[in-house]
Length: 212
Image (cartoon, rainbow, N blue to C red; front, side, top):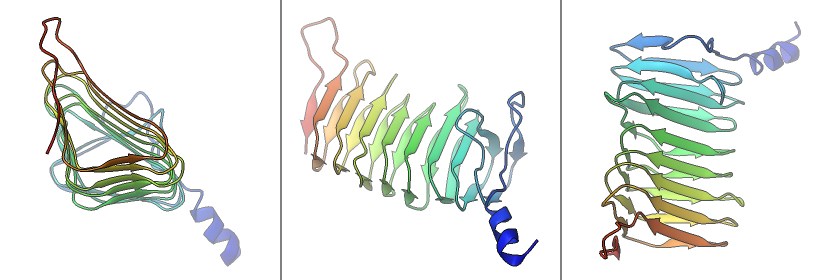
């Protein structure tokens, strides 16, 4: 191969997982994944159990990681296109980050437990955040190019939002947890529409939507 064709070949290389495999990477230490193209796929993520940090770089492709029955903490996540992170299982599944998240495509975070986001999340496409046990935002959330921002909590806990922007898109916030609130601590800004809803009891008492 010529140097140019060899370099081109590098950016086609991927890390994939057989769909029948439950957990492909299991360690009490750290996991580092580096590929020129995709790491996992939307339909078949790389299933991991890590005791330490997980660092992932997909130079021109997407990052698709699922944590199975274990909390997961990410160090560096670099993607050429999309970032799709999830956790599954009843035993654990909190998702946390030590660095900002930036994607040229969409960002999808889906936690079987809670999402505690102290870092900034920026994407050119849609940003979709989902959790079962509450969502707390400490950094900024910004869809920069006509993407929508969707934030959903499912089972227990509150949604606490700081600063959310959808440049050219819409913002939808739904807390479907029984007794769950939505707390707005700063501005939600959308060029499109903004929708916020909480699950209502059958009793006369509505759920609160409060700001501070």
